[in-house]
Image 1: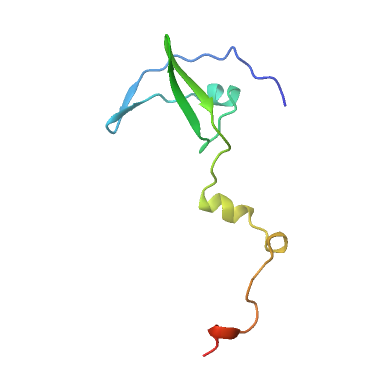
Image 2: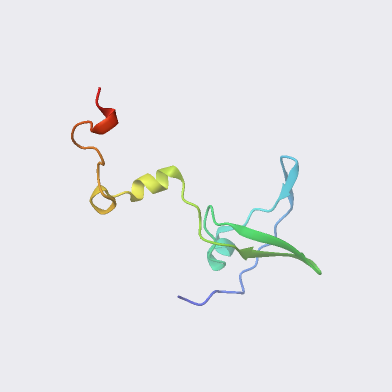
Length: 89
């Protein structure tokens, strides 16, 4: 894994978002911190500011899960033939 560039810096302004506040991270900052869309983080208040920490792997959307689905790898169609057992009428 390549080294993280810790010298990336961006000045931002806190904005209103719904009934909360938000700061948008620039692409260079997100790349340097290895952040991805959907990645869970924890936000911690520390002396002098806040601290963001990655808290796990990104959660995939349904579209991303379906795109990654390979029938040959994941077992394919479960009921490719006729109805069985209690499913018969």
